[in-house]
Length: 364
Image (cartoon, rainbow, N blue to C red):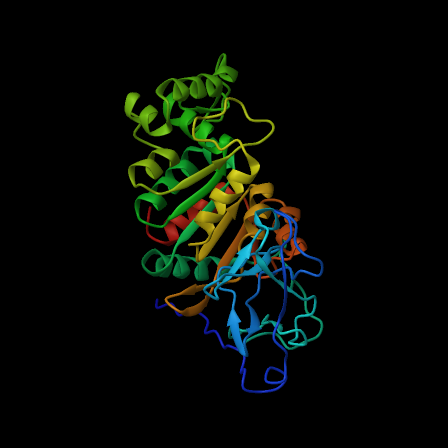
C-alpha cells in the first residue's frame, strides 16, 4: 500500500496580521547559562520569527529552549544551560504575531473523516481503544521511513526479558527499520545477558524460570563486558550472535545508553553525565522523523521534550511522528501532559507490540 505524508500548509505571510507585525525584540545574554528577562521559550510546534521584515522558521526546535540569532542570521534553538554571554536571544511571550512570533499549531492537513459530534465514546487513548487502524498506519509509515526517513526507537528493558521480543527487535534492526536507539544501562545489560547466559535478571528468556544463582548473571555479564572494554569487543570475544545490541553493532546503527542513579556497573558505553547524555540523545533525535517510545516512562518524557512535531527535510516541512507504547495508560498519557500533544499512545504489552510490528512490516 502506498504511503503519503500529510502535507504541510505554511502560514500566508502576505496577509494580516503578519504584514503589520513588528520585528522580534532581542536582548544580549549577559551570563553563561542564564537567559535574559522575557526570553521566548519554544514549543513542539513550528514557530516563525519576524526578523528584518521576513518571517523565518526555527527549523531544529524542541520544547523549553531559547532562540538565538547567529551572526549568519540562522536561528539556533538552544537549551538555556548552553546559552553563552553575547548570544542574541529572542524575547516575547505571545505567539500570535503581536511580538513578531507566530506558533503554527495546525499546519498539517487533517483527516477529513473526523467525527463532528460534540459527544462521542472512546475519543481518548485507553485499554478500550481499538488500535487496529494505528497498527496498519504504523506498518505503512515504517516501510516509508525505512527508505525516506529516520526511525529512532526508545526502549525500556522489558524487551530483553522475552525471547520472541528480542528476536523481533533484532529482525527489525537487520531489515533496516532502525536508524538509532536510545535506552538505559538495563536494556543493554539484560539483552547481552540473554545472549551470553540465556537469562535476563537470572530468568530464562524463553520460559521465565529463575535459574540457580541467577541473580549473579547480569552482574557477571556487566563484568565481562567491562573486561572486554566495550560492547562491540564483548560480542567479538564471546562470539555473540543474537539480540538487540548484537544487531545494532553489526549493522552500525548508532545508540545512546544513558545512566540512572540505580545502575549496576554500568556498561562501558553508558554515559554517566545527565547533560552529556541528553546532548547525545538530542544528536540522534535531530535526525529522527519517527520516534517510537516503548515501556520506559522517563526516557519517553525526556525524548518527547526534545522532539518537535515536525522536521525540515531538504527544505520541506514534514510531520515527525512520535509514539508512546506502554501497558500503563498513565505512561502513554504522560507525553500529552508534558505538552507533546501530537504523540500517539497505544496501551498494550510492548513485547507483543514489537512482535506484531516485525510481522506487520515483513521482518519476521
